Image 1 (cartoon, rainbow, N blue to C red):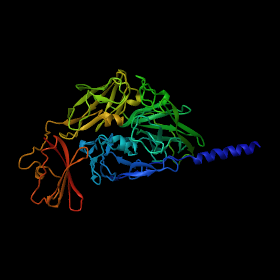
Image 2: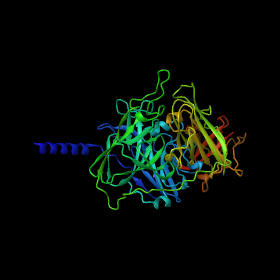
Image 3: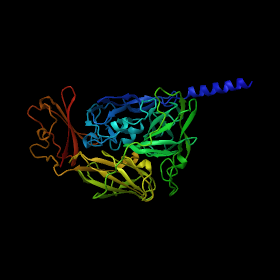
Image 4: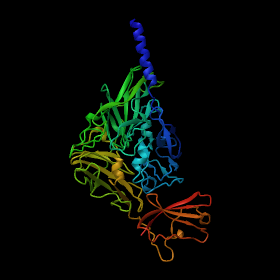
Length: 560
């Protein structure tokens, strides 16, 4: 009788494991030429329910792009989303024109084709939309994908790097679903978590050896405090922008929205076991979304899963692979933070209005304005930024186009896992303060700015963002002044090489939010102009199309 019971129990457990949804691994795309298609779709997130989603090259999320440091890559982003979008290469060190910020809108049906050299260290990066006012709505619907950069230094280390086997990307995303199991374009009352686009509690098979998990908090709003149910220790080897000096042993890891970390988990000898990876929301510091929020005025902005612990995924340990990695290196790379000697100080204050608001935030007392440059940084200079948070919630602060080093957190040296290259750092609430050191080494552009902002997307969309130019003494800004004879002349614009005006039959002018402001049908053999004298001062995009409707040029200009 005992044998039958034992057999039934084993059979039940096996059936339960087999019945679990398997966590999918995003497809890997290698090379130097990539094609991404932002699009809408339907995904079966809940059994038997078709949920409306957005993704790249599919219904939800997107492929993983594998890049090699030093190579030049070309990426065609063909917008079939049915709306204007952008694609931002989060964490990559690229020029402002290639960054995919709100100033590079991709209209429906158009293709944006940035070309750039991969200058980043080996690490985990990601891509997502960044259209001002619509970042949240497009990201929460599913638009996000991984970027993995490899380099010679990382390749010389004995680390797991067989994609999808012992080197696995995992994006964790808080989302809000309504009663019909549709994604709601909000983040205040998130009630579910997806792992690689499937519901929490799904399963991942990993071999009994050292495995590498690339963790991304791709949420709009909430933090994760990751850990294993049995307090299994793991080693963090990398942060946002590269490897750490040495592996850092830990049992819990907090990641804010936009942050990434690579961890090594030693599963040697655990074949046949099942481990549980969890969210420990009850252990998040107060004021960190996803944990216990500050309670003021009877409104603490708590969601249904906040301040709770729950399972994120099961890990079923399978047989080891051939040539398995079974040891963790004791050292990794030597990070050398930028020298602070002679650095220019700069301060950023995060405030709320009214003071106890949990939704209305400012940086240095200002809301984002597409046409306002908040400051200029000089090429070749180093700056120390002091970030002070006077609000009642933590804010993950992100800087575009470069990595920085954390100098201090609340006056103390940063923990070891924050001592590598970063592009997102959490500024604690209630007068929390973080100091970072940044250096502007290249990519001066007198017209196109980089962004800095809170990576809680609802905060970013409602104006908790600013922008800056990197300039040099040789930089100059060309602005077009409308005249009585030619308000904006095609011939006045520096068109891309190879453009034949005789083939252009339609000109459209869009503001930087993607709204069509002017349109002109014209044969341009002898030139043509568009009257923009009544448009507000600011930046615009001019799109030129041929007789087939194909875009032959897109040019940005500034109207005084």
